[in-house]
Image (cartoon, rainbow, N blue to C red; front, side, top):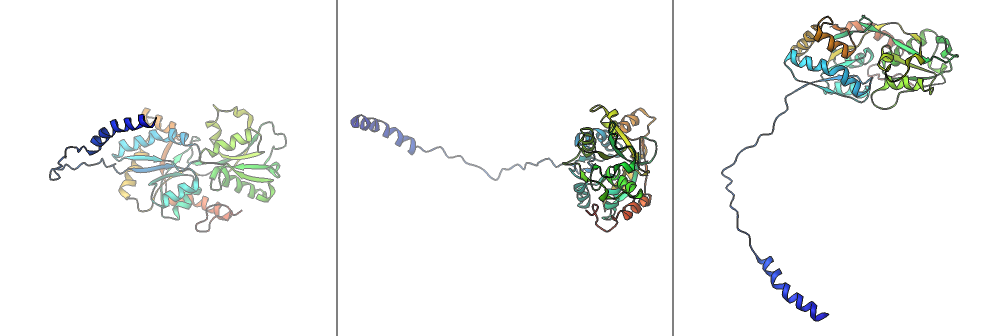
Length: 314
């Protein structure tokens, strides 16, 4: 056996040595002849974000036609971005990562502390430039008929900073002598985005006795659940509606062009109707920081007016 191995090695060794000793032809590279390759540069875009009260899919579906229209009308490039949480939305505006913020009035007041300024607000499906919060329960809940019946209930709300989904209803409870301590528990919808839907689904499933949402949310879920099984216990008073704000130091001429395009949208024109109906609004009108004085008063009444306050003290 050893002799066979030696014979094979003797036959293969010359082949291996030849393979190892072979030299490849030298390739000459002339570095004096060069061509510079330029990578495509992405055009600067105006970033636009919808506060994530609904899922990212809903946010995109409601606003992508509006964003495409703004691009055509202004000649500028727009890009929709999708923060996962209310707090992330605020921080992105503060860092200059969101140019145009579409948010509830409570979040706007927080943004204004960092230099953002309102320039437009929407006309709600109700036909008013204002909206309300709603306290809901299952329709078959025989124990909750009035606001006072909510004492001792398990309450699920949208977010600490949600206007219609928490703070408007909380203000209504407080006005009626019902404090946070009067509830068995107060929880907030988990996870990123889609929190309004999660509140409705949690009440629908019986996991909570009551929930708080902004008006209009039930219509969004009418194809997913039997909304006749949900009853509105009471709606809050109206507050100034959702607002468009430009980040600090955004060029005024850009804001003016965007505002002009927004105000030109008309529900009575075919193209305008498609865009506005998709967004769930009836129009966009001018706004100023002073329009949100009632919201600041509510925040003060709830102890939320301290600079940098982001949520209700627990």
